[in-house]
Image (cartoon, rainbow, N blue to C red; front, side, top):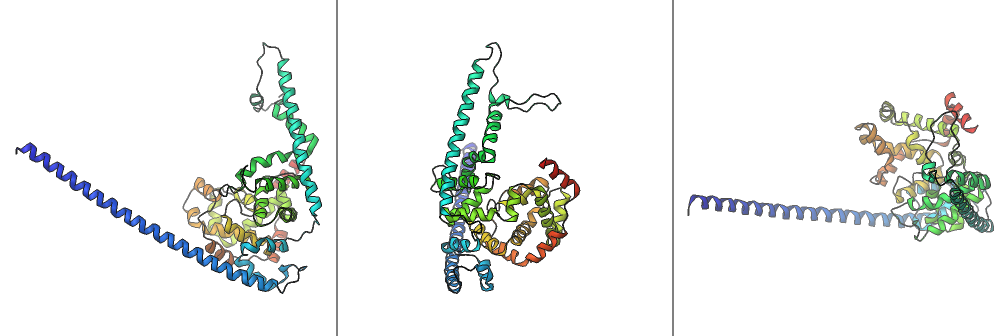
Length: 418
């Protein structure tokens, strides 16, 4: 055997040896991965079993307490229920408890609800006819134009004109239809936006996609609300509230709960975009954040990140657009019991749990952290932090009264009202 052959054999042997090492390495990593996956699976099963056991015990306690409560009484009056509510309401009785915590002060009846649903469908039909008529008129007008002149498509016409004193009115198809529907229907024409929002509502559940099992119920409920409050119409964010109620209740009690929740001082001002009210609540939140988490508050201010960036969505959806559904449900349990102060406690607790991520990042990463949802947040960790943050209704009322919105923000609100 010559030297060349020996070298070749040596190389082949090394390759075989390397392949054998690589094979063993892959096998070892595969075994370790399988062990890790098994541990995670066992841990999740254990947590699920513990949670199920906890819910059974909670349900027993809830039923025991509820037997002592008169059907006409609000359970918020019972101190013994306060601790139970903080621990969470079992899903099987959540809808019933929520109905008690959200009394039907608006005196909505089933007959009214059915009537509103019918009117909403009629409104949609009329809007579709009106829109189709406008499309036909636009097509006809373009046919009559001089064939030598280019015809602008609606999309081209819809481009913004340069800002100058002599700019022409935008005559696009969309603009024309928008003007006419607004004149005829007011804010009720916002009913057409509902179908666009539903697939984006709890997308992971797939319940509210067009062919989803609750799509029709949710569309009817929100359509009925636009008829019930034509001055407000449909506003983005309402779909999350309505969906949460529908997951836990039948359509009629869900509609009552939605209408009465949106009628609260906080919600009606947020959904009506009362900027004076909203800015005041943002300033109140900042005062609490500065008190409980001064380091994070100062860091966000140094990056020029204001609470307005995230807080409006958090409050308008009661955190349902950022937290996992099971945690959101428990937050709602407490919100209906403890009221507005619980929103501030929850918001500050979330920021506290994000502390390391926020303090170690610059602007873009911090914004992403505050807006991207918190699917990895632990329910136990969140509520442990909430329990440490003490904000009573009395304390909140005092802070609100002492919080004055700066004049420039007032003037901006006045301008928007004009």
